[in-house]
Image 1 (tube, rainbow, N blue to C red):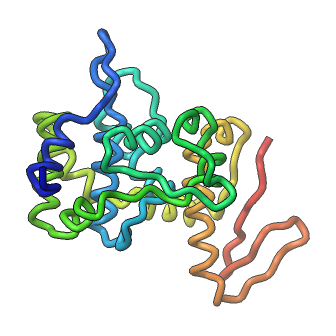
Image 2: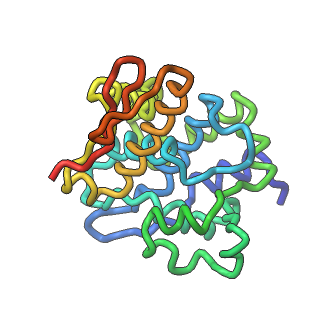
Length: 230
């Protein structure tokens, strides 16, 4: 069977997901695919590489918070690892982790997996299809109709929000990446905030930069906190 648009439309409509008698179908895989499509649409994913990046994680959490009403746990590792079972999603490991397999990765935590897996990659045929706006919107529609029927308007509104940029804006208002101990228990949000903070620092690096005796950064007249509040 040729790996064309109908082939992948069927794949997206019949994802191999866990089904619970009370909670229903696990929404992790469709949420991740919708998030990936948004990054492609925004021009943030130009290569056939889907890293477990702060941008991907923040987009995944954005859709999860709005679309998922069951008590499924928001864990991006589940779809990132287990989409390999759908045969169009593959993992590229770092050289020192080449003997690793997808089995068991989901129990290691996001930070550990980021150290082992460089990125996921798609079938070349699927990646080529997703570069075409017309075909891309068809696959997005398949995901919505198959997994989030009747919520296309909500998803369209969500797609207008760049969640990672929103986090960066929040950090700018707050003056830096300051965490309370309870915040650090949420690994995914911590990775997003750290990633956003690094992007801010890089973008401001050309400006005058000094460090105070308290270990805080002064950039462009703003004091940037990188401490942990107990």
